[in-house]
Length: 95
Image (cartoon, rainbow, N blue to C red):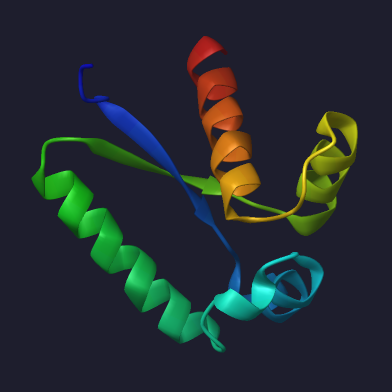
């Protein structure tokens, strides 16, 4: 299996982070503060980028994600966020 050349990462906005944590099925697993989450996410971005993969930040808005979860019968957890981001990234590439 070949390594992807581009991957998406769910990106949260600071003003909606607390609401997002409360609204996700696994929100308690996210860092308590936006700043802690951002630092961790940026570290992951750097590590993935160093391996030659382009990292694309895909904004995740709770209302849109929740609607997607309802449409697809998904739980609002990390696995679903990954699928949602992959779909959004694919849609951006096709646009």
